[in-house]
Image (cartoon, rainbow, N blue to C red; front, side, top):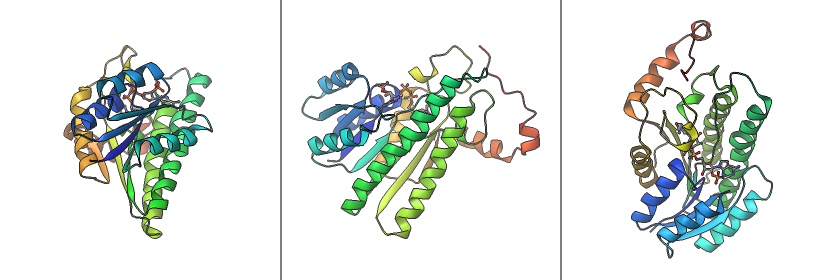
Length: 244
Ligand SMILES: NC(=O)c1ccc[n+]([C@@H]2O[C@H](COP(=O)([O-])OP(=O)(O)OC[C@H]3O[C@@H](n4cnc5c(N)ncnc54)[C@H](OP(=O)(O)O)[C@@H]3O)[C@@H](O)[C@H]2O)c1
């Protein structure tokens, strides 16, 4: 029986993965800002789920994480599913900066806290959801794509650090394409849109059997392969605007 902490367990991929972990018989520590959503999840399996409201953009979030781990009786897997993202072709500074705070600062704050916990134990598994959006700078969502790239690089760096110093921590960088979650509530055309349940099932596989990096699904993996081959001079001339 594993003990998993899911930060961002109140909706979308985090919530769906939490449900699969419950079905697997794991103990789940669920976190996010929305207390009612956390309570609703706990009501689905009262003996198996511990909850802790926290906001990853705040300095006190690692303390809350510590409390949650304690109540869970320890943590084997840290799963980071928190994130925000919107199209922002108008470059509204509030959106850009909020995205940096959540996907950049908040992400680092929490992953560093999990790293510290596992380092003190001599091992563990950190899994994060980044995105395929980090593959190239997207004109339609500059802060989102830049922060997702940062997440990819940050995990690469921590994976090297953990090996260098022999901490025994494993890392999984999960990169989905478009998934029908509340994050995509804005009207728009999202090609190859995937169901949340399907993506959560794939996430569950890599939580059971860690892989270093995974693009979900296969179609998107192929897409990313070709996407990476596009030279920058051509990339900048492409009009990738989602239709409203
Ligand atoms: N949907 C997609 O197409 C897609 C594709 C690729 C990658 N992703 C990534 O997948 C991850 C999960 O997103 P989702 O699609 O499942 O969207 P979602 O349903 O909107 O879930 C986002 C989660 O992040 C949490 N969160 C946001 N801000 C937070 C904060 N300041 N502190 C703590 N938790 C916070 C939310 O909880 P509270 O609001 O309760 O705090 C919620 O549980 C994100 O990192 C997203 O970038 C999504």
